[in-house]
Amino acid sequence: MSSASPESESRNARIKARLESLRELFQAGSTADQYSEQFDESIKQGEFESALERLCEFLMEPDVRPVSDPEMGEIVALHAIMSVRDQCASKLKNKRIEQAKQYGLVEEAIGHPKLKAIPIPPVVPAPAAIPAASAVPSPSAIPSSLRYKLIAVVGPAHVRPAGPTDQIAGMQPKFVIVPGSESELAEVLRLANEAGLVVIPRGGATKLAWGNTPTRADLILSTARLNRVLEHAWADLTVTVEAGCTVQTLQETLAQHGQRLAIDVLWPEKATVGGILSTNDSGALRLRFGALRDLIIGVTIALPDGTLASSGGKVVKNVAGYDLPKLVTGAFGTLGVITHAVFRLHPLPRNTRSFSIVTPNPAATRDLVLAIQNSKLAHTALQSRFSNEAPPVSDILFEGTEAGLDAQTAQLRQICQSAEISEATSAVWQARQALWSDSCSATSTDVQDVSSEGFSSTASPLETQAPNHQEDSFAIIKISTLPADLAHVVEFFQRVAILHRVRWKSVVYATGLGWFRLEGPADHLQPAILSLRSDLERREGSLIVFHRPAKLSALDLWGTPGDSLSLMKAIKHRLDPVNTLNPGRFLGGI
Image 1 (tube, rainbow, N blue to C red):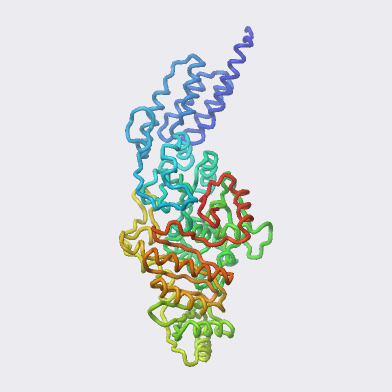
Image 2 (cartoon, helix red, strand yellow):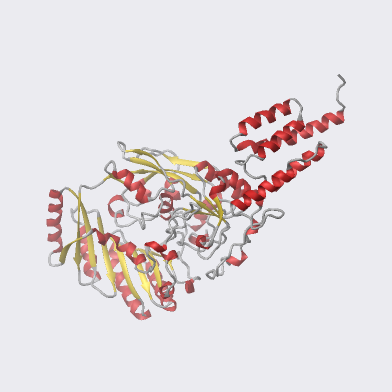
C-alpha cells in the first residue's frame, strides 16, 4: 500500500481535529452513548465521512437540542471540505426552527429563528446615576447560540421568554431560566457571565422589589426547582435545604420531628430559603434566637464564573475557613447565587402565651421594654406598636411548660404594675406583615402561584396588587436604633409626621429594629423620610426604604454607606468582577 502524501495527511489531520471539536454535541440525548461510540470508532478507523454521518443522525434525534449557528456552520464546512453532499444541514435547520417554535422562541418558521417581541410596559423613571430601562439591549441582543446552550443545560421546558409579570422595578428581563440542580445553575451562570449578561436571582419573588432598580436585567435565574430538604439530621438539630424551598415547606418538614428553624419571616408560604438569606429577613424571634447569620452554619453558592463554593458544615461549632455563610447573608444576591444552606435548629415549644400591654406614651413604652429586658423573664419575643391614632401597645411572647408560663405571667404582672395588660392571640405577631398587606387590595385569587408552563409567577404583595391610588401614597421603611433611643425616635417622628401631614404606624422590636408604614402624598413622604433618616444617622442608626411611591424613584433607598463601602466594593469586584449579579441593587450602587 502506498503511503499518503503529506498534503493528504495534513488535510486528514485537520478534518479529524474539526470532527473531534464537535464531539461535545453528544452530551445529551437518550442515544448519545450509542452514537458517540460509533462516531469515535469511525474517526479511529479514518472513516471521516461515516463519523460525520453518525453525528448528523444523532442530531436529528427528537430529544437532542437544536444546533447553534456556529455549530451549524462547522457542520456545513466539514461537508464542503470532504466534498460530501450535504444531506443533513437543511434538515437540522428545519428541526431547529420547529423546536424554537414549540418553545416560544420564534413567531414564524421562515429563515433563522426569530425571537418573539415582548411588550415592555412603561417603566418607573430611574435615578440619574442608573441607566434607564430604554438603554437596556433589546431581547434580540441575546444570541440564538446562547439560548440553545441554555436549553441544552436545563432542558427546553425550563427556558422561556420573560413576560410583563417578570419585571423587576420596571426593568424587563429577556428570559427566565429554571435550573434543576446546583450544577445546572452554576453552568447557566457561567454562560451568562461569559456572554456579558446580567443575571437576577429569584426565589419566591416576595422581596424582588426590595433594593435599587438594577442597572440592567437580562436573565432571571429562578431557584423554583431547587426546592428539596436534602437532610434533616434531627438528632444533631441541623438541616440541609436547597435555596428554592419555601420557608413554610421547611418548617412543616421539621415539625414532623418537633423542631423548627427559629425565624419569623414575611410571607413564609412564598418566601424561599435563598431569598430570606439574601435579604437577611427576620422578625420578633430575633430577640431570643438571633438573626439568620446566627442560625446558618453552612452554605454553597454559585459564583459568576461557574464555581460552586462551599463553606461551613453540618456541625454547629465549625470554625474552618472564612465565614462565607455570614458574608452572603444580607448581600442581596450580589456576590453569588445561594444553592443550598445548612441551619442549626431549635425544638418546637410545648406551649405559648402572648400578652399585650397598653402604655400612655412612647417614653412609658421605652421604660417598660427596658424593665422587661433587665428582668429575669425568659421571654421569646418583645415588640411595640405605635401609630398616630392609638396609644402604644407592647406585645410579649412566652414559650414553655404550663407551669413555667404561669410563673412568667405572674412576674410580668409585677413588672407592669398599673399598666393595662391582657392576654393576646398569636395574630399580634403578624403586625409587621400587616404593614404591607394593609396596603394591598389584591386577594389570594389575584396572584398566580404557578403558570401553565410550570413557572412561578408569584410576586410580592405590593407587585401583585390591583392598581389604585395607594400605590403612590405610601412607603415602607426599616430603621435601626438603640433600644434606649426608642422614645426619642418615635416622638421625633410624631412631630415630623404632623409637620408634613403624614399618617403612619410602626412595629419596633426590643432589638432596636423597627418597621414603619407612612401614608400621604409623595411630596410629603420624601421630606418626612429624609428628616427621620438624618436624625437616626446622627445617632448612629440607619433607615432603609423598602417601598416607595413611583414619584420618588430618585429617593436613595439605603442611606449613607459609611466607611466600609470601599471594602464591600473590593469584595464584590473579587467575586463578581464583571458585575453579572444584581448590579446596582445594593448599598452604594453595588
